[in-house]
Length: 208
Image (cartoon, one colour):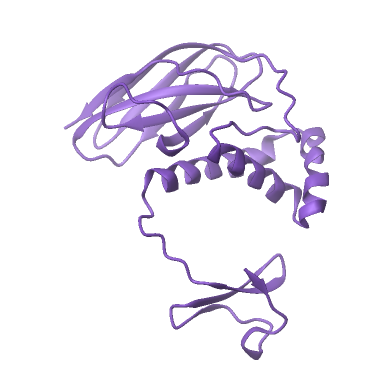
């Protein structure tokens, strides 16, 4: 990405040119970059990273102010907002299959939740996946992974969704829309300070 002073002789230029260059603004700063088109926007990696981005974006507002403030130093270094610093590190950690944290740096001292049994129930072009939580402890969220084959190993690129741990309420994810097939799921919880728990156990359901 290249920052520019007056793209196309206009401080407000936006859009693409000849399918090759894109002009826009980010945090009030004009920039120009090459137009990139993903070869497969629904690849496992794309879906997994988007699922984590969605989690990070949704949870920022609920993070305690004292923890939000810990992102200010990293934000100042990168000349971005604390929110952007938090999302950026969370995405980098997830690419290495590490859970995100509410504070910077992660303390890795929290008590993981105690997990109960999982379940999957088929519906109309959908499957509802539930994960029971026996003890919440310092649990932050539950991650849902999916595959079309049994015995799969959870990884950053088969994540499909996540849910917030609230006490001992079941964490629920509705996977939709789905084509007729048998889908296999596994779940992993993680703590506020970024500790990723073990695989809980595979469940499956069939959409007809």
